[in-house]
Image (tube, rainbow, N blue to C red):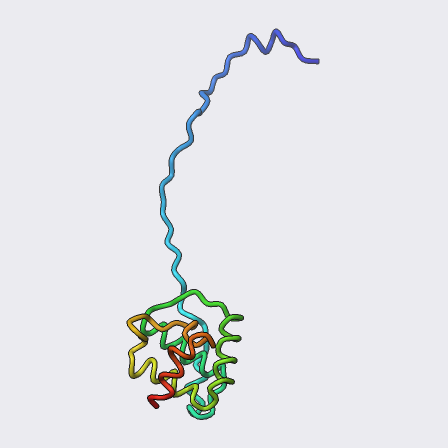
Length: 131
């Protein structure tokens, strides 16, 4: 049973905090360098598959422009398709883009999406004609 008279007679001995302390901190998310291998270094350029092409391009992008967020499923599809479309020229196109043009195409940094099918007429086709 509750004695209500007792509750009225007691007074709190500790003060109650009515304001929470303000904490100000900022966090910056930075992508880490990729964990992609260097399989392209062990294979002759003419025998590159999509994995070697991907490893070369990702390494060169990170060297030229720094780390970037990775989407391995998207990269798999892009480079597998690029290697199938361009065959033996795929490695030469990628090397031209980074070694001759320094990682830029039409004053824009080259990224993974530059190797998609939609960019072929504006990127890979032009480089293939120059080779």
